[in-house]
Image (cartoon, rainbow, N blue to C red; front, top):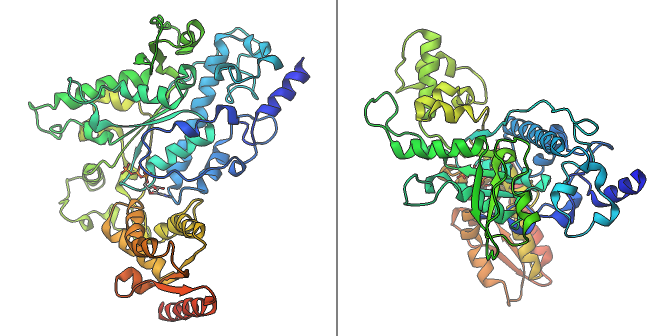
Length: 491
Ligand SMILES: Nc1ncnc2c1ncn2[C@@H]1O[C@H](COP(=O)(O)OP(=O)(O)OP(=O)(O)O)[C@@H](O)[C@H]1O
């Protein structure tokens, strides 16, 4: 039986050992704000035999294909995700140690739930596989990601969810309110259930990403007593309960049958939502136990750097330095080529000072920061990552049978513009759209076969170059001339 079972599993496991097309969640992304890079199954690295869950190192290697820089964040998130899903596996394995043996080939069909064939469980036996002993309980390790807008926070979380093939939902903390205005924090779980295609078991092991969490900081906290921002604190209280693990009731879309009783919250190993699927195929509501949901919270935390600098200045030189000028702080004036990112030095006390209640911060033991993107980073994002903007637009023109090329100068100029505008890599798409509006309007249905975007096109001082069929040589000559001039002009 073991041989049959192993053969079945091998058939089901894709190259990662983490997912199978049957459980593909590609079609259930919620709130896509930016195009997610196209991640194909063949892009996913092979796991060493006998190891089901990709190692943190493999996860980082995978992220490297899509995310430029942010090395520390990649490491922290990969380790957090790896530990989290090991914890989930241990918890789920404990609750029914015999279930692992009870999967038969006949179980392998579209209706088998992820609880039985979870990619997180099927290659590695649950930790308590042969034992009914209660395994060591791992504490939940949710993650806080700090970093400027457009630096890759969402991209990192979304790419990890994709490679793990777990449901992923994005919510904005600014929309959460304690009162009846705006959304309830439970909406984050509602979205996760949607992302799991209304499979509550899948949803209960998904990833919830909450952006702009800095906006729920108590605004009047920095030293001013007496005027507390109760709304922000209330949202923090609600979120912390959810992050720690509670049962959230969410509405099912088009549900018809009776409400299913919630699972026991006292059992940390209970599988949120599973009873709902067993008891009725279309319940009106789902009860999702969030104990096994990974929460990744993020925000730009504007102003936090000042709090950190103030603390460091006090600690290092014994008094509060004048923060009007960073140069008064010896710590921040080393000769390193890469400037210090003060956010790298964040401590929980700084976040409390910023306006978070200590109980909230203590539910986020993993903290990582993303650095602002540099012009070379933007250049790599524009051209090198899988599904880069340049490759997307090249393919788009290719569909009309047209070749488009960007000179090196043009690409550098685009990145310079994006950098000057701020907004990280997010600005690149806007610049490309404006730049390519004319060609995208002119080319379809015309006799144009080649388009050249030069540095002057990006600067707005010259139109794009157009060539017709049979003029490929002229097109390449123009490209080569500009490349030559540009490289000569470079220092
Ligand atoms: N480091 C990066 N590597 C590759 N692409 C990136 C990187 N950072 C940002 N991008 C691209 O920029 C766009 C915005 O990125 P993302 O949504 O991850 O930003 P963010 O840090 O979450 O910003 P915000 O705080 O505003 O939500 C995406 O299209 C993403 O592909």
